[in-house]
Amino acid sequence: MSAKTYELRTFGCQMNVHDSERMAGLLEDAGYQRAPEDADGADVVVFNTCAVRENADNRLYGNLGQLAPRKAARPGMQIAVGGCLAQKDRDTIVRRAPWVDVVFGTHNVGKLPVLLERARVEQEAQVEIAESLEAFPSTLPTRRESPYAAWVSVSVGCNNTCTFCIVPQLRGKEKDRRPGDILAEVEALVAEGVSEITLLGQNVNAYGSDIGDREAFGKLLRACGRIDGLERVRFTSPHPRDFTDDVIAAMAETPNVMPQLHMPLQSGSSRVLKAMRRSYRQDRFLGIIEKVRASIPEAAISTDIIVGFPGETEEDFEETLHVVRESRFAQAFTFQYSKRPGTPAAEMDDQIPKAVVQRRYERLVALQEEISWAENKKQVGRTLEVMVAEGEGRKDDATRRLSGRARDNRLVHFARPEEPVRPGDVVETEVTYAAPHHLLAEGPARAVRRTRAGDAWERRNAEPASAGGGVMLGLPTVGAPAPQPASAGGGCSVC
Image 1 (cartoon, rainbow, N blue to C red):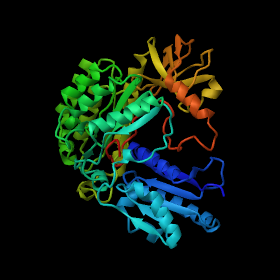
Image 2 (cartoon, helix red, strand yellow; image 1 turned 30 degrees about the horizontal axis):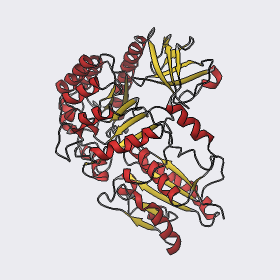
Image 3 (cartoon, one colour; image 1 turned 120 degrees about the vertical axis):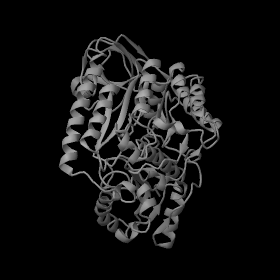
Image 4 (tube, rainbow, N blue to C red; image 1 turned 135 degrees about the vertical axis):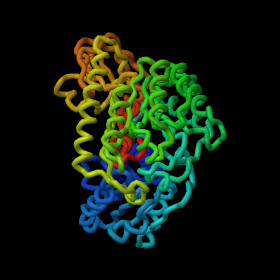
């Protein structure tokens, strides 16, 4: 009898992507195999949901509705729903979609195989939502998509109370991992061939608050710098309130920490920031940007911005434009505010008319496009170290190019070198053209360096199809994933 197959459908943030890697590892540890992409369905379909994205519930129920006739025609097929929306709407999902077999939350991911088996034996839906974390996710089995880039959680949960965000209610208070456990995981990943790590947390630079060490995150960055074979370290997402001078110094002093920073702004108006409960003001944010640029002049800084938060005036919006001009972001994820049920902002007076929000949004996007292009033009003529990627350039086959990320995480499309190059290898190439969202290197490569990461990619691809491949989660297959946008309602940049 052949093994049962599974399919994972992931929505939302980096934390959800990382959770899905755990779900895949649990299922494979229980004897399931990932369904081939060309297969006619899977025995188990798992939805890892997001409650922050706009119309998240409509998207989920639309997908569940499409699966209903398939399940009816396939005896034994099971459907599971987990993640933030499951944590939030625990009593609604089975009522609206009675063909769902399992509902589980953000705190009990490890129960997925058990709940599937219980639903099969008892022939009824299993709904189990834990109110607090049962096991830190990194203690669970994992099936990573990439053999050379990996997420490493430093904490789960969030202690902030931003009025637009429901994540703390769904993922709980911040809980930090012990530094030794984090570093042991990083060292084990590097031993397997991983060369790029993204340290992950809802508020990653608040790491240490749970263990009573305000400088813990800077120490963690420096410790990563001492791990032989670890070429690139990134982290997402920090909060301006907790971003200390010590972290800036650690970034500047640790060679393998990438000169790239994602620092969510949300609004440039101090009055709006107060209404958002963001606990910093415009001058604090601009001060951080100034210090980072002084210590790391080549740093590429990105951000999140919400347009049209309740009560935002034209003067408030002009303050946001001012901060954008001053900060010179390499990239900004810009979103129109929309209500999120369960958040204080959804009940605020003075909700901004859609037409006004749209006009402001278009002005912000136009300004940021202009700045992004100008900042990218400064890269023309520079020789960059690019880690080769797989799937980053949609037109690579047609243009005979390859794509990858520079050390500051800028996307670079470059001419295919004459010698064989694998994802995970490193190419030095000169930038000849800049667009707002990518760079182009049209000349021959200056140098090609084969890496342990490339070796890991080669080993993974030499495995039989049934044994490898990971979970298709939309995770870039080389280089740590690029910063993900906040929700359209302005959730934190990790969720």
